[in-house]
Image: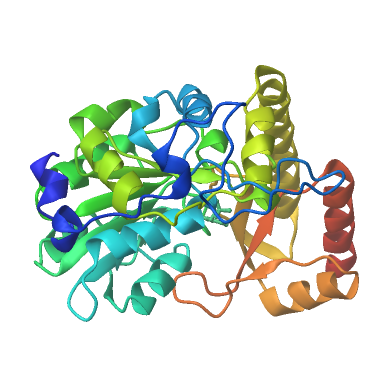
Length: 361
Ligand SMILES: Cc1ncc(COP(=O)(O)O)c(C=O)c1O
């Protein structure tokens, strides 16, 4: 394993034994009779196959993920959404009551929640609000993350809730400065919507970067809970498989559906839907830019945008009365009076824009 990861792992992971599940002990073929996993041998009608535990990390599915993300299949751990990846990585790197993570608010709330649950401290280096957008405070991140207790640095790009993409050169610069000191988790939950693309192609030169990806957003698959994390360090990935996963973490139904969603036909449709969403995003943002109710729309590279309203709560409540629900960031630092709005179908967006027009008049 590369020292940039090995030296930051909680040391007992290097020596402890992992769980060998019943499914790992033998290779399955159709003629084998399995009396080793306390499964129920009777299949229920319409639910055939669901009586058996799924493979923990099916290699064929890892190959499909690898193909989608341009990496090797043995650089991937598949998880129940990017959310589960956060839990696993916190568990692997943060010593309870001792270590810390660094986040750059405003950003995704679960980073802090998972750390506090460990419990690990959460150090904040807020984004800089400059020139009408948000920027990483690169120097401050490097200085703060150089403290020995900081094990994980979260960079979300495009960032939720601001929609901002951060330059890969800056992210790689931060990671290089922190090699041997901290793991940089680059959360690419919204990367498919971004003009900048993914940092995955640079992973070989960035041993301390771990990338999060998910099928939830660009693949319309949030309900199936499928995501992954990616590291260039294959030995680290092997260790995670052996020691840090639940025995059968991925539901069989999600595995089966993920094969379908990653097929060339469905991928082509998903890609087309991304284009539609980006066109819709431009249309919706144009209307907000022209509206007297909105004071500023932040540049976005995702399937949502952050907008500063003259009266955020007023518009939020106005929309809620018509059962259109927006996300309120108006009382949080750096996003005062702001709402985050996801791009919907053209009909849903029409309704939103009607509500905006009503609200103005
Ligand atoms: C930045 C970010 N990371 C991770 C997640 C979790 O995604 P998943 O559905 O893959 O668990 C979300 C969900 O909204 C998110 O916005």
